[in-house]
Length: 156
Image 1 (cartoon, rainbow, N blue to C red):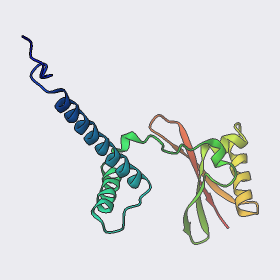
Image 2: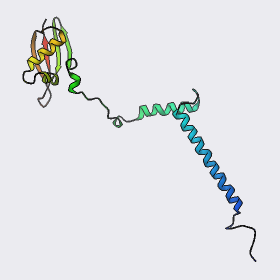
Image 3: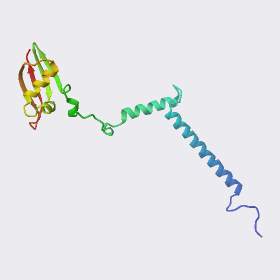
Image 4: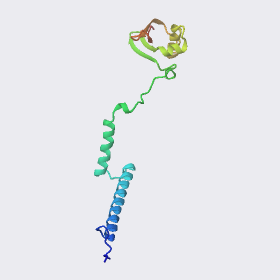
C-alpha cells in the first residue's frame, strides 16, 4: 500500500514553498535597502552629522588622498599657440636701470626663424611699447645643445 501523506523526498511541499518565499522576500528586502542606500548616497540625502554622512565624507577624502597620481594623466602641455606675443617672456631681473628677460625659443622661431635678434627686438618692442636698447643676447641651451630660450639684457 502506498503512503498518501504527500511527503516527497522527506519534505512537505508546503514547507518548501514557505522557505522559498521567505528567502525570496529576504533577498527583495536586501536589494531594496541597497538600492535605497545607493540612491541616498548619490543624491547626498543623509542628514549632516549622521554616521552615513560621515562615512560618505570619509570615502571621498580617502579617494582624494589615496588615489595614485599615475591614474590621472591630464597634465597640461605647453603649445606654441599658448606662447604667442605675451606668454613666453619672463622678466627675471632688475638691477639699477638694467632689466633681464628670458624669452622662449619657440616664440622667437615663430616670428623670425632666420634671425633671432630681429624677432627678439620685435617681441620686446611689443612688450615694452617702445624700441628696446638691447645690451646682450645669450642663448639658453639644454644638455643636448638645443636652444631652449634666450636671456636678453636691456638697458634704459
